[in-house]
Length: 332
Image 1 (cartoon, rainbow, N blue to C red):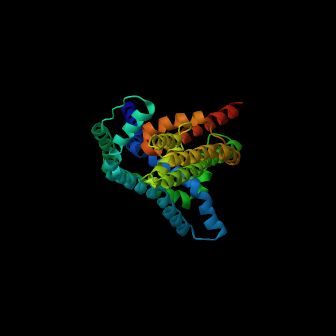
Image 2: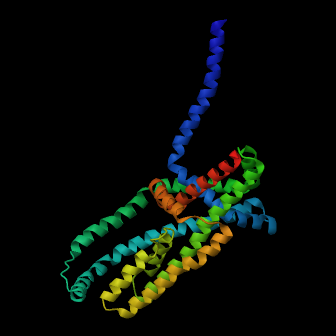
Image 3: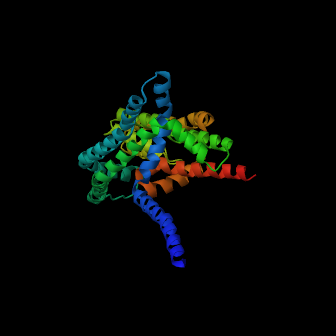
């Protein structure tokens, strides 16, 4: 009788342990694709209002509306990646002609600053070319992983859109917080996502656009590529696009292209102050994210998720702060 009880007890333990072990394995296997999960949440938050507009205002079928959102979001995600790769390739093709100008720059620096600067052109080529090649090689070598992440992201996004109402009901019903806190949690999550992605991206597009226009006006090659880099840098507080336009203005000034340097300087001051004008408006509408949160999130995101971490990192830190605040309110 005792042996039978032990056997029955062991069966119950196995029934509990086996699913737990499988769950641990699934979580471990999903770690490389965690960025895809966060990407799904970001795209879902961004495009949900558009999906609701299509299905509720235009009375469009849910499946058709979901496919329209998939196509739109694909353009938003894939086109910048293609543009970045193409820009890196273009930079490699024009690199020899740009390096040849270093000798002239060296001479101008020595004349204007009355110092003896020696720039090794070949050493610069030997440093820059492997760096660009490594970036391209990393992108191409991870093509399968990127494709798998994109497939998973859009697969999840499709079913999240189709079952968005059910998804929010699950969050409310399974949430450990009370009903009021759960509604507040969902609302703040959406606001923070909009503030981080839509708000910052909107400012970044303006800054990058002005940067590209100024570079094009003074004849700097690949102006659109540098504008795109300016959009990415706009997500980084304090540093931002000035890290591009200030050296460009200095180089033009030293090269005695005073007109070009002034144009870059004027555009640079304007685009750098746009953030101070638009940011308070966007913060009032969507919610404020402290610069410290952005900086910490960027370091966490980039080290853990790579390029996607520029967007994901600040969101994770912001979500943690929201959950902590709600916990303190609940504990009262």
